[in-house]
Length: 216
Length: 243
Image 1 (spheres, rainbow over the protein chains, first blue to last red):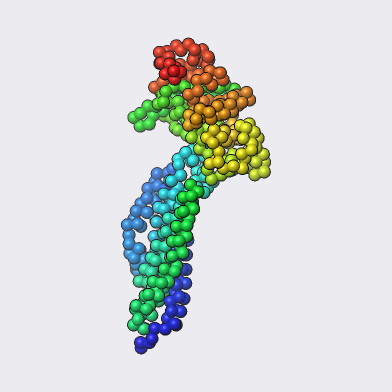
Image 2 (cartoon, each protein chain N blue to C red):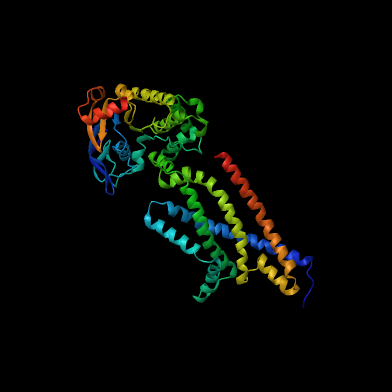
């Protein structure tokens, strides 16, 4: 039965945005953990570890996110590991986020001059001590604007999770459209909600960038 | 046994030989000035001494510990061998105090409060105790280099290495750094300096080592070696730098 598009639909869409936020947070945490590991491997002194991280980043960056999602959702089921959409989506986004964040953070680590590492090792600090006390604190400043930029991409890309039936903002709009036949109204509200999520972040990123440029 | 023994050291980068059969003994309390034109291998030799560069043949032994032995804990060794670089290499995100206390607190487990006292003492010895809470970018080049010296001194090293530490400074700032070195020489610190400051080498160096084409070409007591060079190459070099 077709019903009118009303405030109740708006309410449902706003409620579904919670899942978009939850998914973004999960993806950012999962991707962040993978990303830290990849970035550190890329600057480590052990060549095979550097190669492994390089290969990981290249392969994942060269794969569409949608394919990763299908791989984790349908692929794991076929090899006898049926997973909930929620788990499949979290895994796929962690793998995806890890590659991009790893690359951003590697760049930030490598932006710190070699002489800083050298000064640290000349004082008897180990690799991890140099990272922790000298390199990372300086690299964080460099990394924040592109990291926030990636977060904005991530929010929008969580919409792909709709394709495997995960009910976040975009999927909720599909459902609303199916029962109201009002795609224009539904998707306008969805677009507005994504914008309201992303706009403050891009503004924050611009602000940080200005602040860092002034400080540097 | 000498404090520093360099025996027949050869260093190559792929096909390029940077050091050829270099030998040098340094006794406790000596001040060695290594001179030579750029590309002669002086800085490389210095960086080999604390293991920042590996060597392909020979031995470097500091106070009985072999630098190039894979079993040697380089981190322990470097706590006893300070090095000051041409480019200061202070940590820009840390205060002067933290620049100095970082290594003692992290590697030696010294408490923060005691470390601050250590930093203050080290800064007194370079005449910068009033800058303890400043940040590196608030200091002049000369002051930054003096902080870098204090940072190394706070580790209480047995041996100090200086890699052209005044080369990046204006002439009027060079003086303040050299005065710190003079002060240090009176405390009996063993120092190996790669330097272009011939005046300093002559007055304070116990020995001058002239390097040429990756070899120790000529060495001897500072005044003699600089005053009456035995080899043509040193004579040419001295003529070039003194005029």
